[in-house]
Amino acid sequence: MQKKHYLGLTKMKLLPGLLVWAIQLIVGIMWLVETWSSPTDNSMRFYIAIVMISLAVVFFGLTILGYTPNRYATKLLINEEDFWFKPMMNSKLIKIKWKDIRYLKVNHDKLQLQLANHDKLITYKTSGVFSSAAIQDLREKAKEENIEFVT
Image 1 (cartoon, rainbow, N blue to C red):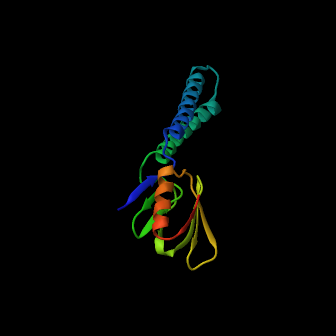
Image 2: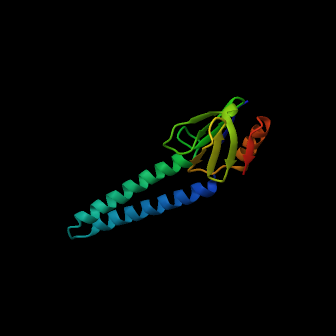
Image 3: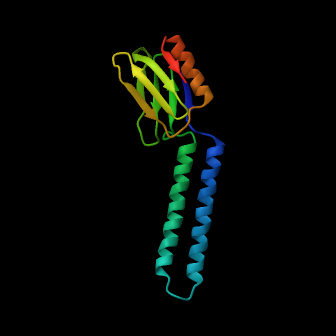
């Protein structure tokens, strides 16, 4: 049975991002309208307005990609033999087998693990946040696999 958790997908994080996007877009449009209505040559102000509107569009795209379930979102996939972890939007999925793990620690935005054949701790910092359901599923699977689990 596979369980999928998206990290950091909450409306409380999406709404401020959309609010910042809307404010930046409105300011950019107001700046553009003011520049067009002015009788003097304001070519530099025109370029600044275009840059502000462009950045608002890019910020909107990143907000939607970061806080909606899609293939770019940070995620955690748990199944019987291994788990897959994607810590950042621009990173690849990392596959780790349960039998290879000796120690597992989860903070709100960090996953630390120690492999069975190494003494070194591996730390993955994520751009999302582990939900309590994701932590609980990791805890249950770690207990089932006799892995030391710390939160």
